[in-house]
Length: 376
Ligand code: PMP
Image 1 (cartoon, rainbow, N blue to C red):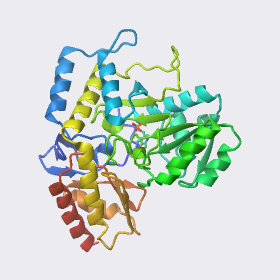
Image 2: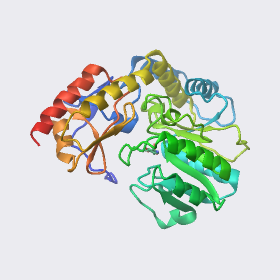
Image 3: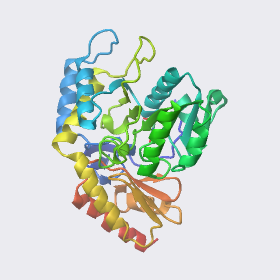
Image 4: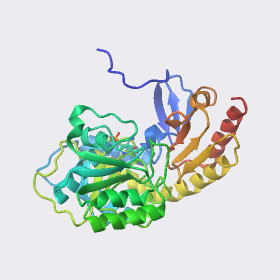
């Protein structure tokens, strides 16, 4: 059987990973500045993470929604404490799209409404409802047309107020920092006014922190830079450091009822073990602080390079926009300098390294990047 191949692939096979480095099947080392789309948060094959998962897989791999799983309770407690959302509750699933899918469903149960506000260049996943609120790339199959979506410009509070004024909006969904759309951070003032406007309209505010969360922005969640408290927060990616797990943090205004949401794999013993280990490592190794420090350093140094059109970012979530397509620069970084980067659209390089990136690794990237830019 062939693969149903929807991705363009580099001819490289990655066989091993340690910290911020990966190795291909010939043993060639690559610096990883993309972390598998922000999935690798605490570093490849972190020894504590490996030890915890190994012990769990030897002991028990189990899925049940009808008996107690104390690891879920421990994860919720730790996540609440570290994120500052101790009074919220946690629903566990397996991915970012699933987290947004469940958040939209909760919002619609709660309000009885079916219209959603999303933003230009947004990305929220590829399941049926998540893709419907995604602007970039826009992929709407006939089956997705079930609910109405108003795509508005980011940071345009008047457009939001106008759309909310009809009183029929179920939810506003917004990324903490837009990732796929090119690393675009909503202004703090906009988020504060958005939060107030949603409260006044009885609309649920969903913060998608799937890419920007888990310390990457220099705070546990990117929206915390604006000091707001959304009604629902969605997480995935870095939550499991490579083990699939996602979650919805749910404010106390929502009431759980039997059968309203469900999953087979979500919140398994293995997934919770991975997610607890990630939180332990983030705390002990001060990775949120490191993301802020190294992120600021990279942004400052990159801002000095004159060929770059614009640097955008928060912490270790950085967009480097050029006037021209970045394909050649990225390919040369990969094949000549052995450095993995990502892209947003055609003209922006996207950096989402593991949160443990050191200053010396940041310097290796900066030196290599400048060398390549001299000859493109
Ligand atoms: N939300 C955001 C902000 C994302 O960046 C992504 C993935 N790129 C998703 C949701 C979807 O996550 P997943 O691929 O785990 O479904």
